[in-house]
Image (cartoon, rainbow, N blue to C red):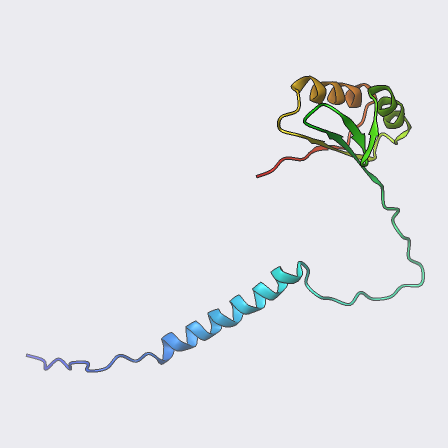
Length: 126
């Protein structure tokens, strides 16, 4: 019969090595998440073309049904007139109060559909 050797100690050095590697990974990732971007320096070019940033228009529908375009109050007719002047590929963001009437929401959506706006975002809360 073989004589089995009993272990009186546990070797924790490999465990500590793994935990240190995990700690370094977590700390590195959290700094990238906190900054929101990974810091890099872009190379320079003499012939570069700047992409034109499109303006974002926001339509607000308040609880009482009032309409606002970019924080300035408008009537239904003024809103339709101003939206018709906006390019079809420009972004329109719709922010409607949760207690606003559904009719106001449908009216604005119908107006945007009639004007053939394709870039529409509806803002909600999680």
